[in-house]
Amino acid sequence: MRFLYLLPVLFLFNCYESSRECKDFKTGAFYSEVTINDVIYKSRFKRSETLQVEVYDGKTDSSQLRWINDCEVIFKTINPKNMAEQKDIHLKILTTTDSSYTYEYSYVGETKKQKGIAYREE
Image (cartoon, rainbow, N blue to C red; front, side, top):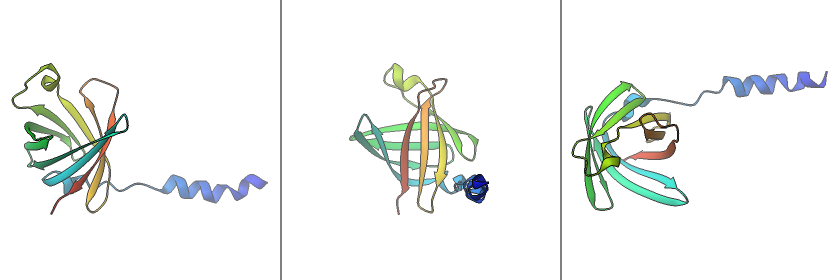
């Protein structure tokens, strides 16, 4: 009988769905933060439908983009300088707000994923 009190609460949590307006973030200028082993890595990038140019630690990288759907994209480095840069990266947008999105990414075929947040720049 006392479990009946929990039933409405469970329905509220099951009905909650996080926002994903991925189309809003397919193009534009962004600032990103990724935390790996308690170290924050920051970068800035500009993205069109098919190209992303990123500046990280004073270095510029360019990638071709292939969108799988509105929320998932594959990055292929245009001029890889080492073996790691030759691997494609899969990025998936998990949630969005009006000015940011949370994402996870990994090398294509690998199961270990990292998470980050990207903020739209004006």
